[in-house]
Length: 375
Image 1 (cartoon, rainbow, N blue to C red):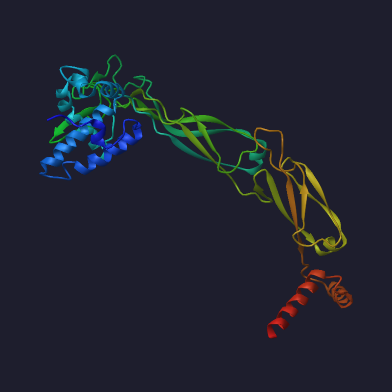
Image 2 (image 1 turned 180 degrees about the vertical axis):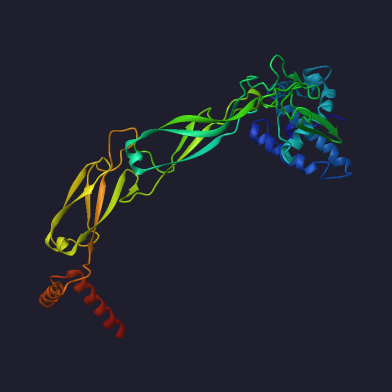
């Protein structure tokens, strides 16, 4: 019986791209998979047909030959070894399907030395240190390359040998019915090498534990939560593998006076009732070590904000600075003397709505609101 056209088998056009081809194959392979159709010989035959068609069309060279010569390209010892080659590839196709649908893991992993783990270090700094920048030294407990075996894990004078179980590939395959299962080599744990005479100092791991002192540059203007990466300063890899990275997570401690928002800083300053009413001035500290003078106009209310340009945090990788915002809070006097109380009562008796425009306006609107509700 003559074979059906491969494009017809997969239900795609000859112009199909790789993504659409794979999608069509997956749908049909799942539909006719033997595990989903136990004992169904027709489904098994269609599954083989679909696998054969996809095996040819997914390969650019095979597809080009098929487009030009059709099935004749693979007959009589032609491209790919003839029809028998397709039968021989069936187990491989089954393994590919297992990898695709059941998490087999895909491609082979060759022998290699494992990369070391990344490390995290939490570093707290003050707002002043974030303002000026600084260089700090940190001590990090980590694994380093064994100096006795230079990271190989083997006793000096010896070398690891190629694993005979997997031939140095790190993976082994075993046929189970329709499937070809691939798993990590149990003899070498996927490394492809066996150490028969391990290093006495590191026990064959190629690394030892030690505290390391590192210098970290904190740039001026750095923000809370910033992550600094030190490449290759993490844990050493097993048996000479590359080291991981060290990530430093910065936290800026709360400040006594200032709150930060990006490059701007905010400061809440209490002022006396008389300063707010009559006007005046006060001085506030700034992060550069100097003081700044703030002038308060007459009739200043709580919440009034004053802006001091370029008194904020430096902007990283620039010569600019943010601003400082001073918000005043009018403080109500407490523990009044008899004379102070008399003066305030005298002031209250002589005051009018012009002296308290906000409170007068509020209560007038509130009264109007209640009258409207009553009809």
